[in-house]
Amino acid sequence: MRAVRLPVVTAVAAAAALTAVTACTAKSDAKDGDAIQVTAADSKCTTSTKSIPAGQVTLKIENTGSKATEVEILFPDDRIVSEKENIGPGTKYTLTAEVKAGSYEIACRPGMKGHGVRQKLTVTGGSVAKRDPKLDAAVAAYREYAQNEADATIPKVETFVNAIKAGDLTAAKNAYAPSRVGWETTEPIAESFGDIDPKTDTRVNDLEKGQKWTGWHALEKALWVDKKVGTEQKALADELLTDLKDWQKRVGKAEITPTSMANGAKELLDEVATGKVTGEEDRYSHTDLSDFKANVDGAEKAYELLKPVAQKNDAALTTELDKQFAAIDTLLDKYRSTSTSDGFVSYDKVTKDQRKELSDAVNALAEPLSKLAAAVVK
Image (cartoon, rainbow, N blue to C red; front, side):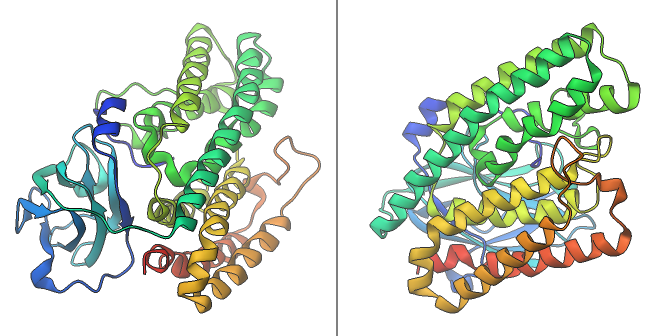
């Protein structure tokens, strides 16, 4: 589950008109004079300029407020060009992106909720530098991978939905985690899917004011806590299937760039650390390890496709990433189980020390992964 943004307008036409972007959340070499200074506070978001030429843009962000914040570069329809979540009070961060001519917004979201405080950003004429053809091949391969994952997900969701509509709680519980795997593997590019994420994968504590709770986790609670499904849950199941079929169609049109793949993988590992490892994501079913593994697989796929270029530019980085991906895969294999429908032990059986070990492994991977985007655009 990624951060919720409401309202979101899905605009395929806008996507074609404002073809994006590559984005990089690793440290930038841009000098302060060439960067947009962004000051984020609890009720304001100030920027040092409202217009820049096309090409690379660097945001020098400082959070002077009392809450953790998120800073984003957005298309007019709220799709995300680039973002950095969880910038703590008193913290500075550098965010870089490549943007083509068009209209954008820079948003600061204190507390990482709501519409946020926004400033207009106009990007004037110019051109983005050509990139290695191998990166175009990586994007094409990742799009094919994501499409295959989406296509394979729909029958599993249909099994889940049919069990709910039949009132078969046991079958629905068994189908729950498998129905989520394809979604979780494609989460590195979840921001490209517009409003599908908040509709299908929002946790109760992430709901915005006035937002109806829909999707997997509302049904998860009905199955494991309420232990019943009625007319409302059956309608939610149908809605979930409809939304995911919409997602299936959007994957082929999603805006994917080499650095959005790399940065999405890093942001996803951050989400694993704050949601999956803590047990918050699947808090009723305790199927967190299934999601955890799918997230790692999706991030690893993005890395594998980008590796040929990254290895040429930073061989030491790819050596470290190979090591850390292998370590986390080996660690997750310790929790395999043949007695559960999702293939992993129930997460409520994982001890505090074991969760700490998992957290350490995620952090050990996330640190070098934060450098991958920079490695592919050198």
